[in-house]
View (cartoon, rainbow, N blue to C red):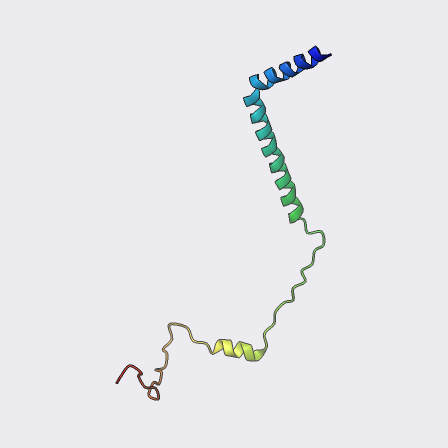
Length: 93
């Protein structure tokens, strides 16, 4: 019995030594194929709606807010001159 275990061990080592590159490539490609199918199934499941309804509320603005937004000026519009007459320059002695 001891001889058959040693022979089996030697045979397995010879097979692994002879085909180690092929086995490595098959394992890597197989792993990549499994990951692609796994990611594909995640993408398919995430795109299904299944009756999902959003819980967010639609925002509404009151008229006062709309009027304040309309009063804002664009960059191209003339801006009134700022009045600096009440301020003094702190760097003048």
